[in-house]
Length: 119
Image (cartoon, rainbow, N blue to C red):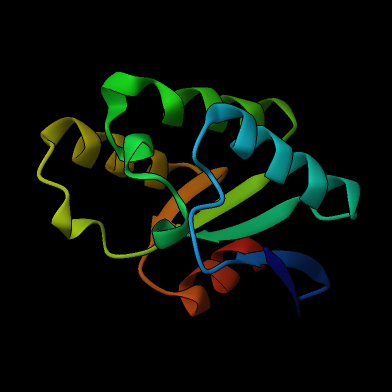
């Protein structure tokens, strides 16, 4: 796992990059958030390709449990990827509702993520 540090409008943003899944379990999500938060970031970008597919199957409750931790600690999160490949209407509704808020958003590019996190 590599942390790329971005600074935009005096906001410090951590972009997490890896070659494989870094969120395979709820504990992984919590650990990564804690690590990023401990390093002084309250804004984070993670790539969809680094999240196990179970996250996007809402029946597993993995997404809800991880994102609840982000909410509790008020760490803003942008998940970057192409979400059109997921056929679940429930997931599409979840993404749509998340994107109405500011805490957790699903976006198509790192540039979009940085702009939203710098607001």
